[in-house]
Image (cartoon, rainbow, N blue to C red; front, side, top):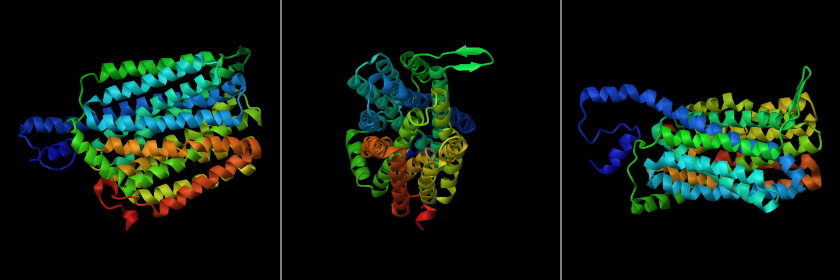
Length: 442
């Protein structure tokens, strides 16, 4: 049997094994596989949650950094544009290394968290705008290096349940996104309750504290997964990799999902960043209140993310993606009339049902059309293209916020999401779950 077939067996496909296996041993492996698969999914999801805790924490530091360095809205937007660009570029080497050295996936995950730790260390010591830009770029690099090894590993392990596997992984991210703003807001703002008062910590000290969970995660990854190779961990030759990459870059379904990811990310990053500034500068919310409200923006996603993933496995990716982006566009417009108080809070919870939750379905749609052996590069194309195309959105949103206030940002984001919803109706999406034709493609 050709070597390619044996690699496909490792990914859980149904072809016969190339070597003889004792029946008892085969039964033992089969009985242990579900438990091992569950442990793998939970472990990667937990790491993803910690990564997103670090990624989400920076938003709550934004008002403090803006005031401390006396920055304009455009300057803040420029910092996040630089971060998004670095996130895009970091995906390229991550994808190459993942596909060519799949047995080194744990090391790639450890390097990812190491960059997150270094990013916060630089943020904590910076009193200079350009060093802060570099710090956010390092942080962005770290958060992006996680994507290719983690998402491609799950795509290989669960070929017929990719929507659910991607969603389960992203649920960990939702937990991190939800807990980080509230916790960081509490650390910055302190509290006063029943006569007990605490004034909180300085933002630089909080940045230093954020180094700790990243470093601990690196140590756990290196100790837990040292020397363990993933299934299908054979090295891919440079020649076969280049051929697979050429086919991938000519794949309209993968490229269309990269554009879809860019539109979703541009909408998400713009509304989230300037919601923080709106609550701080216009509504005069405390750090804790801002943190709690940003947590609400992802809280509902903890439940909705796996639900959308399962629906996409059963109904096809297209209707789920199109409906979710249309819902984002409609819900964002509610900010024009929501004002302050409960209307604002309810709108943020409702928006959180879709804002981040649709991302893993877009990833699954790209994986459906990816050849075996180039999963990491497919993720790289998806996230690199998405980040680079969408990198200008925070700068544009900053200029809009300066000249037309938050209402202008709301309209800008609603238009982006509406364009994404319209594109989802006609975009090529290739095969459906498990390689079968996507029901939505007719």
